[in-house]
Image (cartoon, rainbow, N blue to C red; front, side, top):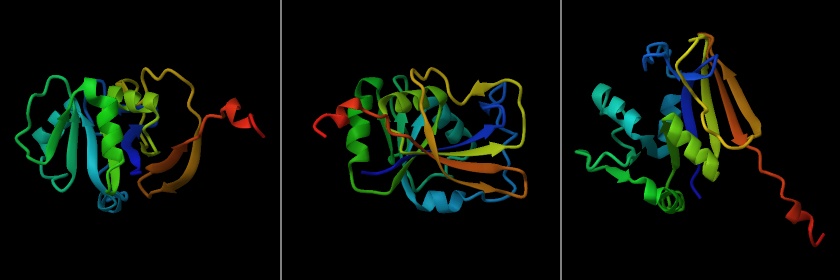
Length: 182
């Protein structure tokens, strides 16, 4: 089964966008492991708003990745390497895609898509690039999650800019039924 890895920039106070949707606070002075990450991925799961932003700013940036855009409003994409996934097909399509042969799948955003992936238990790892800035307001990384989710730290890396990357996996929930028959 392919890994689904959330890889996002986040402010120290937990925002993925500033109060006006800006992301000009994201450090771009060095690679921060993106080349290696992109080389280990062959697909991207992305919400419609994030897709629109990507297409308006740098449509070639992820050209080699198969794009899966989650949207009930987007009808078609001019990019032949893009598939639109409607909410009615969300669970079944994600299950099919992650069970296909291939490399890692990058979960890019947005916040409501992230919540849906967390609620379904689809995320394998979280790679959070915590930027040395406090935005004060904006769009929070985690919204609408139904349950407490415990994480296990897999590693961290500190950069000279003050950015810290944290790599987590989701701790499996303990099932009392596992004890039956022991």
